[in-house]
Image 1 (cartoon, rainbow, N blue to C red):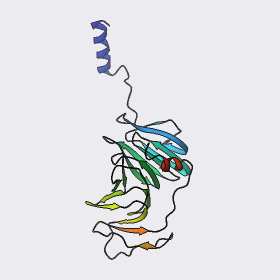
Image 2: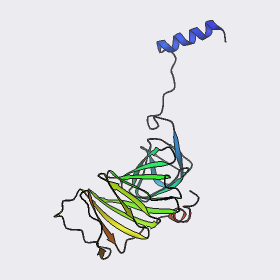
Image 3: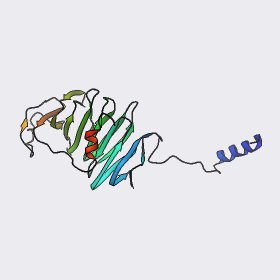
Length: 224
């Protein structure tokens, strides 16, 4: 290309005559964080999504009441049952998922593979090793966490607590000391941790999401 032609193109670009492809509004950074591997009645931002779709930093995934979705990043596997939604962001060595509604199940073999945010609380694997957990937003300032396999690290309000694997927990955030602990409709509860920022109640019996695709999350923490 001659110098004159190059100069002409540059002038047109500066004048706004030649359109320049814009970044997608849903993918402001164009950084892929993973791929949808299964989807039924599911959405990517405001559009329907199907298996094979690439998800970028800042994108949101959600499911309808009867929907389900499975997402795979380089270091973790996520599963959304019906009426659930997350926003995804890339981290240096893993993925950050912000639970906006409903439930998410995650599986990973690395402590840095996944960081989950729910109502300003942070849930991460406690250490490297097979970890599978389910997190549900029960209501305002109330979470339910099921540590199916591996220990978890729970952080909120500047405090951190270890959640032992093989147990389920009901967690109340920003509760005054006078607030009574809730009675679980799914079984008796045990005494748990209490701090100035949150209360943890150990639940004896809690159900798991059972929609299609969940078996892969349970079976694949060593190869997400």
